[in-house]
Image (cartoon, rainbow, N blue to C red; front, side):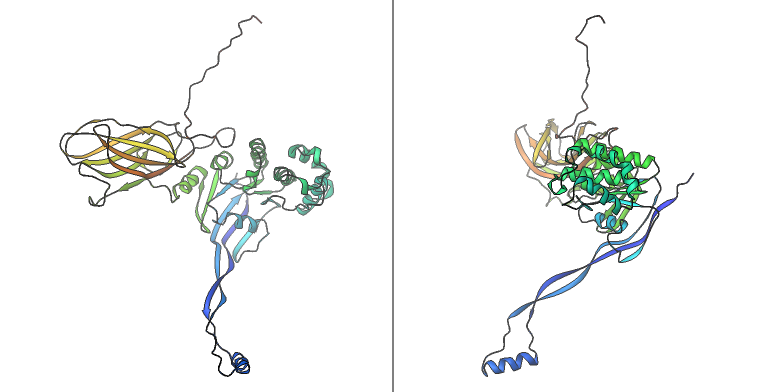
Length: 420
C-alpha cells in the first residue's frame, strides 16, 4: 500500500539581497557646485573617493524539487552554506520562498535552533505550554503529554526555574521533548542535536524512529554521517543551493563524501619532466582502489588498496616504496618498505589495508621511493587522499575516537567456578 505524499516541493528557490561596499569617484551636483562657490571661489573640487553600496541576489536555494511520503525519515546532508537550514525554515513556514511552491499536509513541529519558541523569563513548565501552543496544541493535549515531556527531557529539578538559567543542553532536551511528544505529523530537526551529550542523542534518535513507526514523517539535518545512516533510509544531498542527489541514504552519503575538495582517487604525471623524480627513480601515478574501483570514498568494511606506479631509471636497482597514512597532520601508521632488485622500467607496488582497520575520517597518503633501504630518492607528501565511512551500527553510540579502529577478536571467560 502506497503512503500518501505529505510534503511536495516544486522548483523551490530562495534569494537574499546582499550588499557590497564599493568605492567610486565622487560626482559633483549643481548643489555641490553652489556650496563650493559660497565657501571660496578658488577652492578646487573634491575628487576623493566615497563609499557606495551595490546589491546583488544570492540564491540560497535554486530549482529544488522533491516529495516526501508519510512515515519516511529523510536525511538532508551537505556542507555549510549548502542551503539545508534555509530549506527547513521554508518547510517550517518561518521563511517565505522567492519562487516555487511548497505543499504540506499536516502539522509541522520544528527544532531548528536552541531555544526557538522559548521565552527566557518563563519557567520550564510555562515554556512547555507556550511552545506547545505555538505548535498548535490546545491546553488539554499539552497536559496529557506533560509528564512524558518532563521525563524525556530530564529537567524535573529545574522545571520551575526560568529557562534563561538553563544550559544549552537543557534547552535542547526540553525543546526536543516538546516538539517530539506533541504528536506533529511532520517533525523537522536540524543539527541542534549536536549540543546534547551522546546518551541524549541516542534517546532522540530512538524517539525519531518511533515517530516514523507511528506513521509520522521526519526530516533530519546532520553532519554526523553515522547518525544519518542509522536513522534514515533516504537522503537529499544539497550543494550550493542545488539538489544534487535524492536517493538511498548510503549512496547519497557516498556521493557527498566523494564531493570533498580534499579527496581525490587518482593522480598521475604524464610528463616525465614535471613528475616527482631524481636521476634513479620517478613517480608515475598513485591511486586508491576499493572493490576493484578507483575511488576516494571507502566503506569501513572494505579493504583499501593503494597503487603506486613508478619507474626505475637505472639497471638492477635495489629499490622499495613506503607509504605514510596521515590524518589531521598526524601519522596513523607507515606501510613498507618491501625491497627487491628492479630492472629498468615501469613498476607497480600495491599496498593492501584490511577492512575494519581505519576509523571514520579523511586520510592523506605520502609516498617515499627508496633505494638501498635507506636512501630517500623521491618524497611526495599528502599526494592523494580518501575518506573512510561506515554504514552505521545497530545502536547509535556517537563518534568513536582514534585514528584506527581494528575489528579485534574478543572473548570472555568465567573465573568463578563455584557451583550454583
